[in-house]
Length: 277
Ligand code: A2P
Image 1: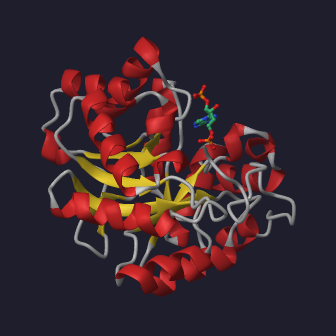
Image 2 (image 1 turned 180 degrees about the horizontal axis):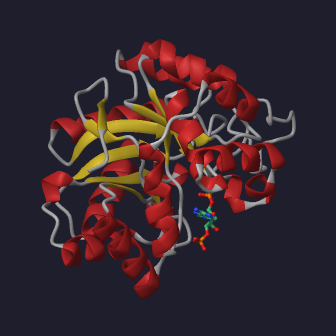
């Protein structure tokens, strides 16, 4: 089984999970089902991925007891007002056929719209009502974390951000850590692009007898982040779980962090200005 770590609110979070962006429909059900069969216990979904139903179906077909799984979804930016957020969470649960989400995140801060504190506070309310076990955020900059803490007295359990060796997010990780917020990595492999062909990564991979993706995912876990690699391919899903079986030394971790570039963010969605609708 994938080991877990304890979040600030007590939720036991597996140290690696399955990303599901783009996995939809019957193929999506199969992909998530394969991952659960392979041993994944954390599945990351979102209202806007239009695959909550596929995740729910895969969970039911897997036969794995519900309380052994950590199922995540996220609140879209257009539903930050209280009534909208309540309706969206209910709809999210209905689509998935679930009676609770283990983790529910404010997907984007939408700072210019200005209602992310209301969204976060509403999710805390739904947690108290039993619909959600743990409330987190995604794409929050340090100033957004401070704003929710000041307004509600609570910090999010996780902050899921774009994080990979081209965009190592030193300041953001430090800001999360100081507050006790666990950083989750979206696109941990940099979308499977040129990073997987990088010579430094290849050299470290050879030294450990593993593939480049495993080296990168292991780098995440050793930084203290929880990677959510997306793969529809059972063999890759299994390989990505293999990161729990070897350890990088400090020099190797540093060499991979040094692959960061000033323009390394893949997404053009700057959380400081971007408004997800
Ligand atoms: P596939 O779904 O065909 O297996 P990210 O999570 O950073 O967005 O990257 C996802 C991409 O990386 C997907 O296209 C996925 O392809 C690919 N990928 C996932 N795991 C591996 C792996 N172990 N080796 C190579 N490519 C991988």
